[in-house]
Image: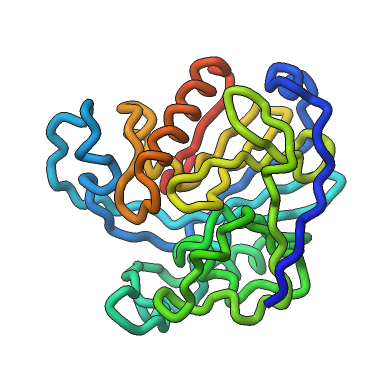
Length: 276
C-alpha cells in the first residue's frame, strides 16, 4: 500500500462563528451497519477522579457509517462500518483471540445501504482504523480515495484485527501539523475547500483519530466518532478507556469537545456509537 498526503489548503477562517455564518448545502445521513456489546465500565474511564461508581452494564450499541451528500462535490462516507460477512459470521472472517464479535441483521451492511439508495461515492474519510470503522471497506469501491489522519497507519495491525485494507492501493493522510488551529480545537482541515465539511484532529483514542463537523443549512453537526463513545461521556465529561491508546490524551480531547459545545450550543453532537 502506498501512503500519500491528502492535499488541503489552509483555511483563512479563524473562528467557528465565522464558519457557521456560511453554511453549505450538505446533508448528513447515517446508516446502522450492525451492533456490538460493550461494558459501560469501559465506555467511561472508571479511574477518572469524578467517575464515581460505574456499575457493570452491557450496552448494545450500533456500528455506524455516515453518508455526506454535497450538492456540488457529491457523496462521501465517514467510516465504512461492517460488510455483509458479519451477517453469517459474528467475527467477519477474522480469526484469533483478538477478533471482535459483532451482530448484524440481513441488509444492514454498508454495501446494501449504498446499493439500495443508488449512491455513487467520491471518497471515504476514516476516523481511525479499528475494525468496526473499516471492515465495510471490503465491499466498497477501491478506485476512490481513502483518507485517514497522519500516523494512524502506524498502529494498524492487520495480522491481529483483520486485513480490511488489503485491496487499497493508496491510502491518503491528512497532515494536521501544517494546518491552522481553530480554537478551542487544535488543527482543523477544510476537506472540500468550501467550509462544508471539516476534519478535526482529536487524538487519544488512537494516534491519528479524527472527528468531523458538517456545516449544513440545518445547522452544524459534530460527529465525535470514538473520542466520545456514547452521550454519557459528554454528560460526565469523562473519556472512554476501553480500546483507547492514550487515556490521558483522550481525556484532554474530550474536554476540548465539551468546551467547544459549551461555546457553540447551536451545534448538534453525535457520539461515535449513537444514532440521531
